[in-house]
Every structure is written in C-alpha cells, then in structure tokens.
Length: 214
Image (cartoon, rainbow, N blue to C red; front, side, top):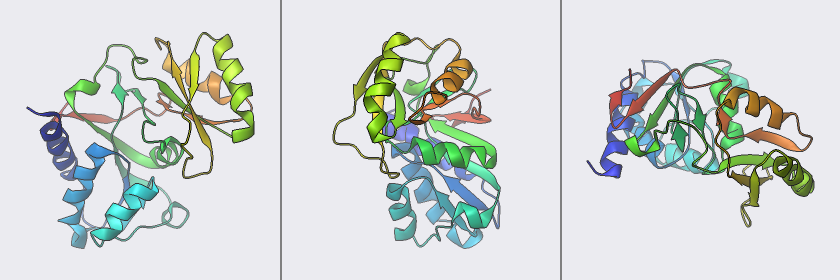
C-alpha cells in the first residue's frame, strides 16, 4: 500500500465517526486533507467545523463547510487530526506543519480525539521526528539554551511564522521515554507557548492505514 493510499483510507475511516449535527474539530496536514474531502461529501449532515489552521480553513471553506469559532461552539464531541509520530500508548509528536498550538487547544476541548496516520508514523519511543516547540520570538535564544541544558539540540525553523505570529524550534537528539513529564517541564519555560508533545492529552483512538488500532 502506498503512503498516500494509507492516508486516504485513514481519513475516510475517521469520517465514519462523524455523527449528524456535529461540529467537528479538524486538524492539519496531508492525512487530514483526505478527512476534509470525506467531510465535504457529508457537509449537509454536520453543523460545521472548528479548524486548527488557516490551511485547513481554506480547504473547508472551498468545500462549503462552515468554519466556526471555538469560543462560540463550546466543547466538541470529536476532533480528528494526524501526527508526525505515535507511540504504543497513543502519545504523539505533532507540529510538523506548525499548527501545534491551535491543534492542542482543540484536542483539549474535545471529548474524543481520533488520530489518523499511515503505518510509517508508528514508533516505539517518541523522538525520531524532531520535537516542535512554539516560542515567543523574543524568547527564541532563551528557550534554546534551556533545551540545550536538557540535552536537546534546538534548531530554529527559519522563515516559518505560525498562525499565531510565533516561531518554531525543532528539537533533535531526544529519546522521549516520559513524554508527559517532558511536556510539562518544557511548557514551564518562560517564552514557550506550547510543545508538539500530545501526551497529557493523548489520542483516544488511532487509525493506521484505515484500520482502528487495538
């Protein structure tokens, strides 16, 4: 199975969990694009979507799906998003597309979080994919030094500005055996907006190449 075929199957499988009248939380990325396509075929059944990025907003609006404000919708029943890595406990690294902060907000606001991936995103231990950390621009060097003191190798993703106007540090060289602890520790550093670790709020279900993982 090709990588794109696996992504397509996962996106379409996730659409099976969408119920009539829902406001659906929608993530960002190439796998989610297939989910958005599936949503477009059922747009008459849903109230709308809450989007995690300007990119996904454009795709949703192009298909005629209303994009709603999370402040107005309140808690969501379902959030569907991809991941850059997923461990056996459904803990994730996200943020390759620089939408991690809005993604984390929507995940926290949702009763169920379904992660859709292709098989290549499964890892035994998080950290092979560099960990994105969103930072306030003036704090880039400060946060970088704090990360280096913890054994990470931060690299500024130059030229990238998040939808929130911030910068991204990609941290190499970590094998993340306790992602919950590291997520909390990094988020206490002044200037860190959030990290790409989705461990305190892990996925509830993971769909791999169109198959729900047990």
